[in-house]
Length: 392
Image (tube, rainbow, N blue to C red; front, side, top):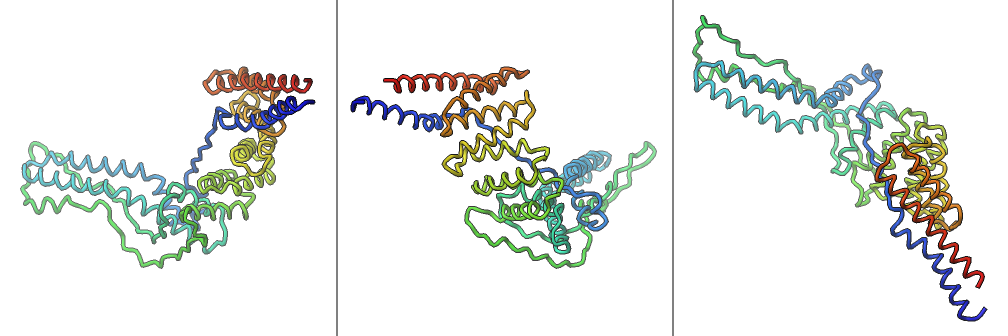
């Protein structure tokens, strides 16, 4: 073999080594977002006897949208009924006052919901002091903090009891025989200007001391750490918790936002090992593989991704979209791994056939078929060029 042939061979094999990396910059063409939405903060009905205040505030929190609508409609009805007042000035004065009351009431809606939120956290934290570890209470806290995870930490405050009054006094319709009873403007306003929310006097309650987590890394906010600690405790101490899969998904989402990729991968791996028969095992396997694919944990991370994508494809029902996605990512993992061989080509053929056999055609499935054909041709052409050079 002369020097020229040696140089040609070296350049070509270097191309084969680098080509998967070059394709990795543009491939795969499809990306799969994993959104997460926590379940509503709930507790079992059996907790009502032990924690009546907690359940009361939790119910008010969950029913808040209905309550807002009812209060607003009741105020609108009061304003409408003022039309029955005969005296013009009194009618206008009362209408103006009621509209101001309504405006203030609506402006206070966000704060009232925050007070309910704080009261629930307060009750739950206090209950955890009496029960060293309760998965339902921990998940309740995590679900409540999750929507405000990127905000500053706020210590839960003792609850303020806000009684929602019944219907306010209404104006009775006057018959033709009845005469309007004249009242001074001051008396009229005093009769109907009742407070919208009556605060009951409650004994002073000592605020439970809430200690922020020990870590003080600048990229973390305390709410995220509170969620992380609560969910991690559920996963560590309560393996038989019914909503274990939700806890894993929440913590994984949190790890992603905190850029803790290694911890996320380890958590997925632990779940697969401890819960092989979980009803969501296919999704967990896909997420674990996806983490390995996009976040290198080792030099052979594509090979690791391929292992778990293959397991995910075996768990998903054939003919479903996620089965196709698993095959698609499996093909790309094999293509980009060091095992650049016939396995990758066979996988892309499987992707094409799976996408073709789906009952409904979508842009995503069309993209899968197109990519599969392109990659099969690329692998065949590359292998043919390698064969020609090897015989020179």
